Length: 427
Image (cartoon, rainbow, N blue to C red; front, side, top):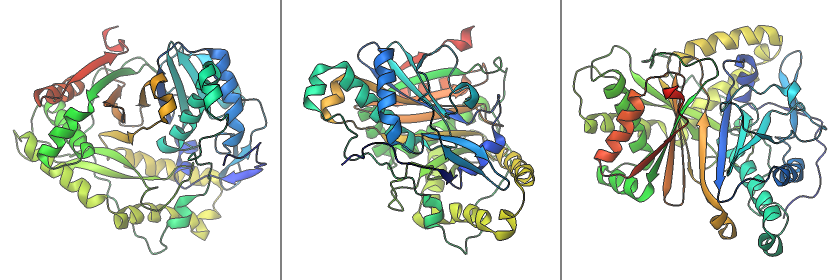
């Protein structure tokens, strides 16, 4: 049953992953990601604002402002009105200035039939944000359609989580050792687009087609997509040449299913889709075998637990906890710069997005767009709705060799793909 009214949250700690984001954020590295939903009708901004005002008090994690203490950043309840819903008039995923946004760390914009939710990663991850976007969408659709207002309760969905536990702390193991390495990886470079200009390419892929091909190779859809992505860097950027550095795609893994968590805070860890081209002219099957094998080895409950437990152990170390925040920030920036060189790109997959039956005829698609981060000039965001898988490339360079190789390979495999772009590459 949905909660009534606003819970009085005075202050709250950042989760383990969130501690990094205030340290590395800047105008050029926003750490903002976008989820969006495209509906079947034009957006009514007044009703969208009304829907946001309605649902925000239920979500303590979103109803927060960021404060800086002596030893750590922390959250405090934001008592200001919800941020103003605005028409989209900038590129995606730009820095969120809290002072211009009623101190909130997310924003809601709209464009034609699309609702955009952009979130500073300090609040939550893609799965936590999707719960918020869904409820915003459902509430909006109820206001927009009398039929829904009559049929559907004006409350949160029964299955929507409002939990805000720190699942990292709850599940970590004290004896954890460092579980990852930081070998410098291939960086996809090219002509830089102007500052804060992002090139966006959406690939709308027939889900049944890709299921058939993945099954043929004996891998999951995610393993197949990541293998095609790595293959596309190898063939599209390296042109099939050898490299002393590996291609390493950073893959966020949702930890909730592994540790029985329903938190709306961040709860993910990172593995790598790894391939090192030590010879020329690998076949796709060879790349697929290596990438899918490395992912299978890494994505086990035991290994995932080891990866995040090491970071939590550092956070709980009494000596580290007593260090003033300005010194912690210097150390964390140094570690981040080193680790940033270990990843070619990030590809995140939110999986299958479902909505209750009464809303399906009003919803066309969902999508995710990632912002750039240090050393990563190209990223991919994936989710599925109905029989369409949406693979969205975002990039800060003009060259599109990787993207073209990616979609060309899919079509060569007999997979139907339609392409949409924001046109930045042609300006």
